[in-house]
Length: 344
Ligand code: KG4
Ligand code: ZN
Image 1 (cartoon, rainbow, N blue to C red):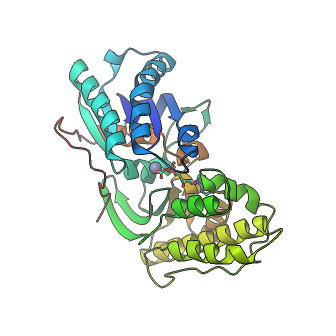
Image 2 (image 1 turned 90 degrees about the vertical axis):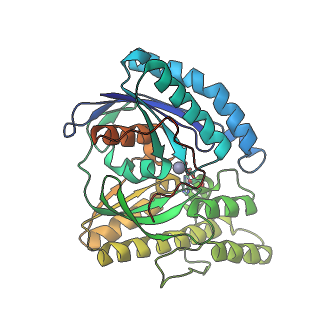
Image 3 (image 1 turned 45 degrees about the horizontal axis):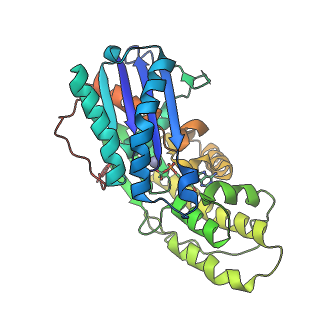
């Protein structure tokens, strides 16, 4: 069973082709291509929706051709076409969904509308076996877990029971963790996106130098705007040689809250496994501290592999394949939804 998936929820255009063997013997990623638009949006300090959708329209056909070439298959051999249907920017989602629906109609194959967050959520189970040059073999069995999704648009902890059966534990009430990294990065005059820039500088810094606030510690929800504001007020008082220490202190404040709440949720809901995904989960300090905390508490930890953390179509193809194997399909009339919820 071979699925082709498009991901165009934000500013990355991505196409992947995944071949499943059977439910238990894994899958093989035949192609995965991502065209990033970071450079085009960087000069505006954030994503411009119309530029993003215009670029998707240009990149999608090129990536489809390249993916088919890399996978050495003909489009007629694909068994189902999938696309991210939300959450994301409406004008961006529309491009990927329209292309996937067009292919499904053209080749007379099923269409699957996939939730972008479900892509992140299950990505720790994909690519956990060996992979080389983007070719992945096998995936872990989906086990109940508490999952942390940390990206530019989302921060949430989710209780995963089984495929499609998810329960929201907590979410951010204001900024997402990645958004806080990006906004603080901008305040500090660093490039966009701020996350990797802050991590780079934090390596040489003292995380204990600035005492920054950690909000809502007694709640299952998250809040990062107070932390961002604290940095804004602190900044004019600082003069020289503070950048690395400030980056390290800010990063540590975010990491500590995420680790503490994730461990508390895993204990409360009595799971053996903690998973983590999304762009911010690339952060090595977050991975190390959450991994260590899980180890101390006797919990297994699975973080999405680095190449799957930021937006990509492989994670969408993976969910599409699992759903197709479980007998799900979507109607061609299925709408895109910028606010599509993952779980209530
Ligand atoms: O998952 P993603 O590609 O897009 C969304 O779906 O939002 O995540 C992008 C976010 C950006 O906010 C970026 O700053 C953050 O992930 N990010 C990081 C790191 N790498 C990417 N944040 C902290 N540390 C990093 N190393
Ligand atoms: Zn994402």
